[in-house]
Image (cartoon, rainbow, N blue to C red):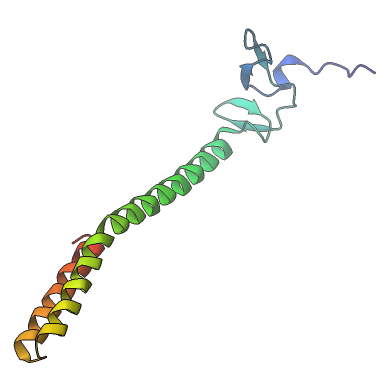
Length: 118
């Protein structure tokens, strides 16, 4: 069954490549929304598309930032392990006096600052 053709002016203004990739075709939906002086269907409405694109961009940036933090922290892991080994060795060979506490606290602070990216 053939659908009756809509008047060309009331159709959505969106154009895109067809399945072959050789021809531009116009959206066949009725343009129910008016924006920028043109008619658009809900799927191709520029304001909705812009909002969705911004949301995708924010999600990607958050994911990328989390990945960067994870890689930075993973890079600090050997330093943290080395600091803990040094503390363990120092405590095994030295009595725990004020000087030892100070050195241990400094090593821990340095390792944590590297892990936090400071």
